[in-house]
Image (cartoon, rainbow, N blue to C red; front, top):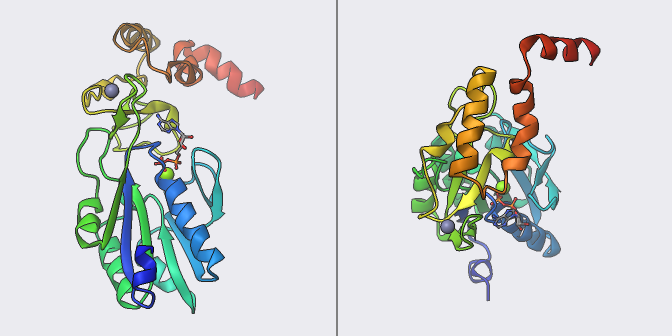
Length: 245
Ligand code: ADP
Ligand code: MG
Ligand code: ZN
């Protein structure tokens, strides 16, 4: 019997957490689809900052997707809530502020089954945003692991392997999954992602050279190259490319 079946008419909060690529979105979608099969009305939300794949969908790295509504703040979820909605899914919960905790609690007290998915830690390995509080108030917590791309162990952490062009040191650079990979505690290095590519071509070449030495096995290195290329070209060439684009 599922947890939900035991408490059929009572609201609960479930949190699905873990590193990037651990399958949080897939698990969220699985739970939402099961609710739909049970003919329960569902609504899925995500923060509007996350427009990686589509504004109107929540999508996993495996291209599994479901329609969703993007909201700029957690309270908007209460305004957008439709009559008879029984199950509310919220992806990328770590990007909301602490009001998401209040919103989830309100929904649960109204009898709604709330499923939140989010990164428990940022790329530095520190608790991420409102996640610790959500984990504390949830009735049910699932912590997923990915596969460490360096050693093959279960991965609990998100490694940032470089700082994307123009990034000012944000916690997570949305839409740049090639800059991250899943790693276990022992292969994770919080300092690695500070290598910047947003400076001069000479610095970029130096960073790239040092990465080839320190991270020769990084599966993402080939994906990084297209991002680096504009940085390696002299400004005049980039200018020319823009004109011809
Ligand atoms: P999350 O939402 O936690 O970032 P998704 O649900 O979007 O994760 O994607 C999980 C999928 O990512 C896996 O099913 C697998 O196909 C893929 N994937 C890519 N890299 C890894 C990895 N290092 N470990 C596990 N899965 C990975
Ligand atoms: Mg996800
Ligand atoms: Zn490892």
